Image (cartoon, helix red, strand yellow):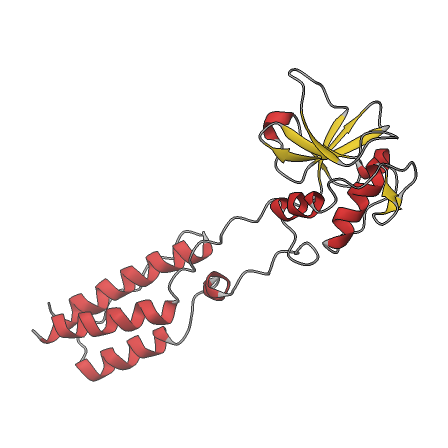
Length: 220
């Protein structure tokens, strides 16, 4: 490969990289000089390598971190936390597991243990997160609102939920009856964000590699 051919090729590659970085069609590449020595070629290529095209910085900058749920809360952690209160007696208006919990008191306590504050009553708790369209889409830790907003439980997966049922009863796990329609299903803990795609190589890295390979070819 002649020096002229090498310069022409690097111009074409630079134009393609610019198009990919900016999303705009590249400007026509300038014609390669008819004669150049290896020193001038290396200097020009080095200068190009240290001047990134528009958008190159954005391609390599780290993504802004997603807003995290307080603490390290997960749906499984919600379920595990709720199980700690199995056997606590139902007490209407109860918010203290030492003396008793009602349905919304249980939900509020479980999420409070994970650093998440929820409203006090069931109907407000059901409006505190993101609506889940149906039971098939529910995940452990989601809230199940029923009885016209008068009762609430925590979905555990495997068609089960944990709740404080009624006076004279205790916090327990029940199966969800076949075909039962909940008033609302609410997700308090958002799904984890998708993993970010690997950052594209910077312009400097690309052009440095091209410099080495094309100089080798031109010298051959």
